[in-house]
Image (cartoon, rainbow, N blue to C red; front, side, top):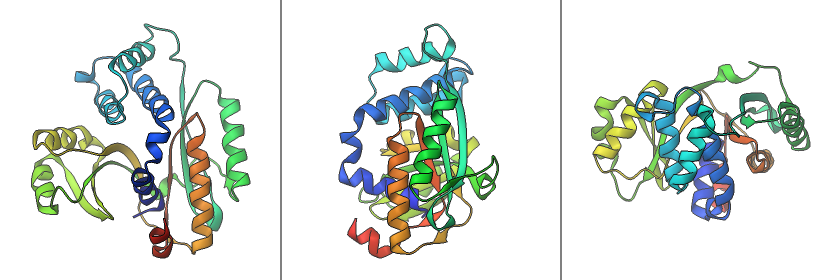
Length: 246
């Protein structure tokens, strides 16, 4: 598994997400706002359905979900957000993708560039690393509660591509177009999803040593702490000795 996926699972186990509930709420609301720009009815807007489902996973209150939808459709002020992806390289030449939702492009690009630079990396031109990734649906479920066969059976007709062993969770992958179908199939099978998103998955990963991995995890952590950053993706493998330590 790529570094970001493993790091995300570690964050969940350490309870880091609970400590950052306010930031989770902000990111979930921003995703709803952006998704709702294509229509405020989730029945006809798959991305909005996915955004609402993800917001419920972090317990975003219903009134905040409804407000975010109205902002996205223009019924309420505060929906002027631009969706941008920045590309670059981290320590060890690792590819970094940073997805942001911002109301101030100049501020955000300056902050992202500064974080990457201070973290030992560099910003690149558009397209410099995105070709290494593929947009996929990703669902995480508790490995103790379900077997691989149960998950495959539940998602077989809904477009599930792969079930990956990721420490104490199973990570289910599907094509982006099948995201909503698989989410519904899992729901119908009463399989509890811990986390779901449309993620940029690297086609290949690169191995780094433990010191480089530490720098990369710190860089990802700092980027994700930025209020405008929605997601960070990378293509490195975390060394097993560092995983054990974490």
